[in-house]
Length: 341
Image (cartoon, rainbow, N blue to C red):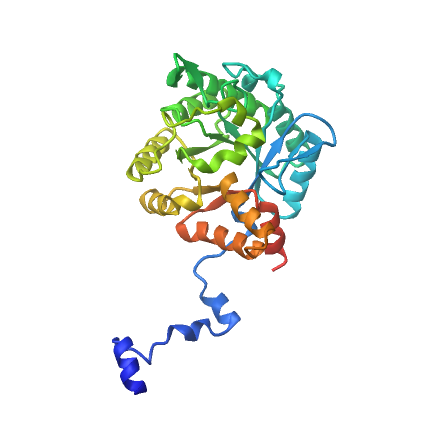
């Protein structure tokens, strides 16, 4: 009876000679044959900054994440160095009085981003600093570019983005990350940087950024949610239904001089990360965005998931999909676990 049962459900002649579970029996064996590995070298830690001193403000929709004043951002950068996290990303939450229709504060060389970047690079010169290039934290309407006749104007926006990129490079930013999704902005920013003598500054393009429902907590964090209101960004961010289009976007950004590319959001688009890595072999990053973080953190805080296990499993999934690195709000927590493993 046993032979009949096995023969019915295991038609392959190799059974029982080949038993896949043999390699899974012992912990040391599982480690030995592991195909993908997650380390602190894979992490970029996004930080939200706002004005003040010794001022940390919890973000309600992102439990465990805070807006930090520049001095506390320096402390976070020191911690990132200690945890062997290679880079941090800086996102601003500015006062509503500084927001304008054209996002003028974005090109102010003394804005919160520039001052924070300079302070961090002076205090922690060995940490990489990434800056977002987009106008949404600085505009009254919450869009990533200049609005003209109800439409986000592409070429006019690019002119402002180049100026924004230059003040961030002046401040000491190592990686500029255009997240605006304007056509041609990578080439224009690359040209502006090179002409200004910043040929060493890297560009990580948000090459495939989807018009996603998973950005809500981030918009709360930078204060653009109330500005955007009921509007959306579908005229410039990608349709979640499209995969081939992502390859076209990425091909264009590579041809314009992008050093690294990013897919955003992350977990719902792991298939896109795999296709991108296979197609281009470029340094490829995934962004585990705010909505992904808040879902996992909320479930863990409610006792519905083992938070640490779920966190590490999702980050490893990015690696399995082909990502070379991950931007994640879990970076500090993950690094602590990885360093103690």
